[in-house]
Length: 443
Image (cartoon, rainbow, N blue to C red; front, side, top):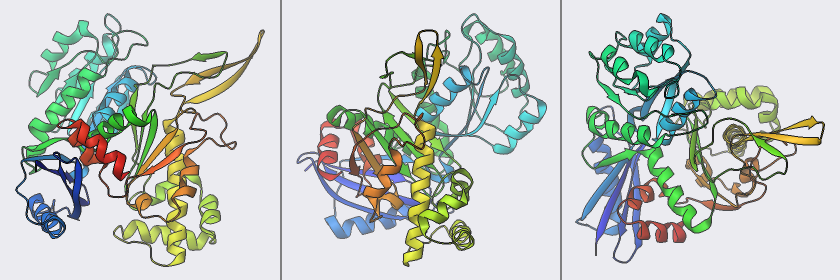
């Protein structure tokens, strides 16, 4: 046997997965509460004890880990224009597995700098201007950031013609120079920034949070790697990870226009794209679902009056460990999950708008066209444990209520029933063949 231990230090639970790469089989899975308040190794030890009950004692040949503990990788991004460099910065950060806790456009103010200090990000990504383009904005922001409170590192990935001057302004900080995320109008170059973000995550942040050398990447980056690998087998796909605090959506698709007479507007989207909705979740962010979807819709789906539904949702947001037991609680969970999925997938997918011209009806597309995606993968406790998964997936599909949203028209459903997706993303960098075979058999 050639055994590998795969660990996900989550914000709430630490999950462990054992695989045998010789036989390309899953040996066992277990989880335990993440003990970030004391020592994360305590939670890991508990999870490993549970795993040993399934597998017996194993001397692992390899150990790999990812982490979203202590809030995961928290980033602030700054860019010149919302639709261009600011969006490129966000795509780079989210593709690296980060959660954007602040996005600033144009020239920052002293109030912005104070707010960034209060957010205490793990990394700040400073962008602005195409190569040879606008210089003023990024130089202004660098000057203010030089004296910003906090010890967060800064990645400079803007106009290359200002690179040396920006780095001089940030000489008293931990600053890293990277290629421009948008070297010319409409050109996306986010991979260098993504890789640097991950390197800093490994080098500094993981150690600061008490984790160890086996951590390879943030958990969302591992999930993205798993979906990219799976897409090589099943074709273009969308993945939905519904958590207690956030809802992450992944799409592996070129997303190019499929409708005739369609003009594409805005930056090209990456083939492997992740978005994270920090205001939408099943527990910590349950009230965000209500604000996004409306209490009337939640009430209708849960078959309860608005007052009763709201009371239950407020209770859930205050008792985040609570699992649904009664029928009313299960109905509330279903309503929250349905509206979280609908809201997050609409935000992730592209939009198609109609325009009438002298030559007839035409269309303008922004974002990805996912109408042809044939597979949807669902993970996250609320989705894995639901007994209404086939109903929930419909809320990720094209709807006549939102005809402009370019979501999948129909799709096969895969469920990550053993919660192995992040583990398979880790394994994909070590033994992609085994990772793919296990996903094919277990999802």
